[in-house]
Length: 319
Ligand code: RIB
Ligand code: CA
Image (cartoon, rainbow, N blue to C red; front, side):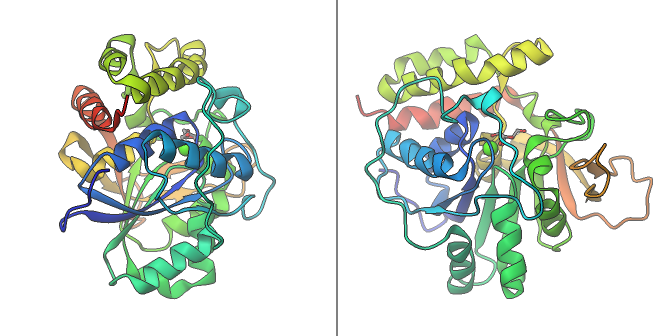
């Protein structure tokens, strides 16, 4: 078990696993720089019942049945849920068969866990790490506005600028599923660091980058199984050399921020137009007078990213 250190950054992972979310959770559980206070599942890639189950499966792959896993919101704030089985498979975690999880789901609602944790931990010491639609985060902010100023930072995967969209011509999936929630979060005033498709599409899981996982026993076989399944969508769509590892960039940033580069800019969310709903309107070139509200990443050192992933996930191997 990876022990958090006194310097560990306390985080809540909010997630809709999802093979890429799953690798992000493994990276967090394998890294002493972060202390995972809890994992809150949200409806996104697949319905909530499956994201909750998948979050527990991932914790058990890491040998961490002690992690607190909570069920959050089962639908977006305003519209019907849109899922992505075409990318992640019917289970949301296709690619390798894993046993039904034995670890419990906590009784408390995920949104209440976020609120209670922000109220009980010293102000400014908890980072929220959303890797799916922002429904849980926005609902917590709406239900308990007092917690907003207590958040240390939000580091999220979502949005796009040059890469524009992956679920529609204009929008990235996490933002598209719940644009109203994203609008609340991006207007909240919380320190915001964004990992958009512009970064994650440079973190491609090539066959060469999977080689180290072949010598990592069960956990390595699981990651390879997930990646082999997950990459199909992007290879077919973009002709890319592998699938983009979107969500682990959130955790990698907490561990080695210098691996990333971007700009502090204004990012606004389109919620009205049916044509561009969920678009992150990123003022990359500073052409508006809208105040900057997000550190919007544009690039990463992909080799360093995969070196960190394989180094840390190797520490989780049991057999
Ligand atoms: O657009 C990519 C994002 O949508 C990732 O978080 C992936 O898991 C899906 O949720
Ligand atoms: Ca996700």
